[in-house]
Length: 213
Image (cartoon, rainbow, N blue to C red; front, side, top):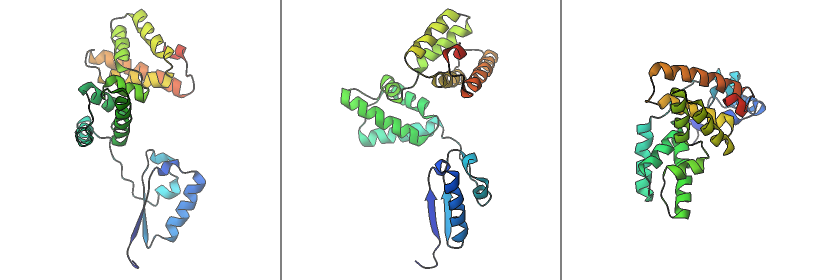
């Protein structure tokens, strides 16, 4: 109706090109008296400064595991999805605090489970998400903790030969180490520091098995 304020919501705004954002900025200026624009994005730095300076920026933290798990329980109950506890734990691990990611992983895992007559369990989730198995990564960390480098390298080679990229492996190593409660805090911090250095080198393009070793 005439005189009523309009609201336009643009999701994944950070995927817009610079030219498209410049055009949007002009549109926002023309209709600023009658329209409010809400831009949702994952990386705010990808939004041009001309738009950022004209907006109020609201940042939202990732959801806790408890919050995501509560919603997964509701979905499983409403959709009659058979699951195991380790299956939901695997979804929490892969979602990294993103509810949409968790729901997508649950849906994909459920589809695979239905086709095989199984349940949403840990094996199904990691198969769907194509994610290095945390159990193997945990074995690598445990071997490093006691100085058993041969075992650590054997497990690392196993992941590499399975087709996982260095970035996928090092990312999982970081998450598993961060949540590991079986090693001393001081040792864990040293591990995280070295993992961070390795992750940075991989991010710069040194994406090789030698870098992981």
